[in-house]
Image: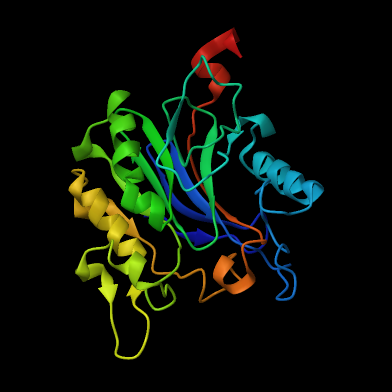
Length: 266
């Protein structure tokens, strides 16, 4: 994995750059302020931020990669297990509603998910040129959003043995305290219990298990060790700042130029 934090320009953490595939996540940037839950770099358009601010960040990311701003696809996430496959027929729908994962084989567009403690997962089959981005909060993870995302990739021609996955920065087990009604939904190896305290869940580890259960080799899974809650000035964290706050954007793109691939269609 190629990991690089760009501290001078657009606040992007590069996680992969291979076979013409770019995978990355954003961080808040040097302008982040502890007392302002929206300060920093955030593309999220539905968590209460000023529209001008999110639009500005949206355009900045597009300029950073040299694409048009309408070629960034961000779902309106609802903690569902729904997956949207972006095709030539629905290419105009760059803000699909009620879905928590996007899959495509279209080059030259960015697909991604917003998170602020939940687990963002980026997947790609470098041989068959299929990419995906999934948002796995505890509800979506338990419900099967990872399985549904991989199934959608396979429907486009991906092969499990070739798929690589990146688990981006998310809340760590030490910070993810839950009630027993949530803890009981997870396998015990992903639950940490201490006397006289509420249980904690290792959500990133559970997501890794889900990936392996769907045939993704452990050697093909990269898992970030960074916790969003532990670093609220670097990453947006709902547990640190509340739900009304900015979001980290984890995204992936097939780097080929879309007009070169499809000619005058666009």
